[in-house]
Length: 465
Ligand code: GDG
Image (tube, rainbow, N blue to C red; front, side, top):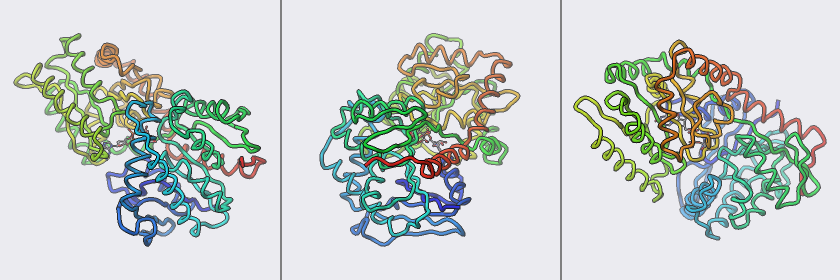
């Protein structure tokens, strides 16, 4: 069996500390089965940066290998091109994107430095799996070093329509670099077809069907492999002590009232101000909910040093004050806004105690919170998911109430439908989604990608030059 080498910006943790995301758990599972390396940034900035010694951590079969970046790498690659250029563009937010030549140079440089450091650690039959928008050009540097191993890539965030991506300076060159991968995985059919269309329209490629693209004399696979969660285990979290404590506390606090739950990193893609406005509209348009339904928003801060995030935080604080000032009563607070994080077990209890899961990003690759909310429900009395049509999750979770997050009226009507949905309808919708999630879980996702990348290299697929 080949070793697996995973490359991603942040790595680990190897042990489930309670805070590890579901994705980390799935990748550790894949690594443990085949043995291998998880390679990436240490999260630290130092003078030596990528020229410094590796920081390693080892279990019996898996090794974490991390290295630092310099301040310049951090500013241009991470804070710059990855988070101020690619993140907004790929989420269709050209209005927020910063285009700076230095950022792009820094990005290519860090991709090259990471591949140069990884090269000597590789064995001839390793399978390499690179993750996310930080490393679009990684494989092209590996190929330049004559690394011939199979290399798969998975993009966790959306891939926009070619009309949007074309605004990115040098988009053709970035996408051409991506063709050095053997397989490029996307969250949804729409993302995959946007990519194929870009390659056809801008790079003269041909769509061969079945996710295969022929371009520049070679072939590459560009397909959707929508990411799943470890649904059965997440469901089990709800009977842990941490979860039961939260369920009891919340149920006591609510005393028969209902709670809508939102859980998101603070990020402009998550549509949080729009969500608060929609909740306010629910209280305006359906006044019977005043005093009876509240919104709890859990929002652990992320990338707190970027101005755009500080502004959203301030806006949300103000909106919370405004809605609470307008509607609160002696024994009822309409919005509770918690900027702290919980362990995954504790979170599963919060989901379970909430009658509605409100997931309304303006754009999202997948959105795992939608899946976790469903996994955490009581089978005999499940809550209802209200889900944005712009989350990748909407492609497979058609039994949720699908809404347009830009329309407060539509989200409020969706919430009202969720709050009043009869038990048998709730049960039916929940069961279809839960069963599907158990089948299409995180392990099935990683297996499908690994099988396809190995298959395409043992078949007659040739890489483009
Ligand atoms: C990217 C894409 C795609 C949140 N609060 C706490 C906590 N969380 C966990 C959730 C969930 C995860 O964070 C967030 O997952 P998302 O899917 O919403 O989003 P991104 O971080 O934006 O990730 C996204 C994903 O990659 C996977 O491919 O779905 O579209 O943007 O798991 O539970 N976890 C803990 N405490 C918290 O307070 N422990």
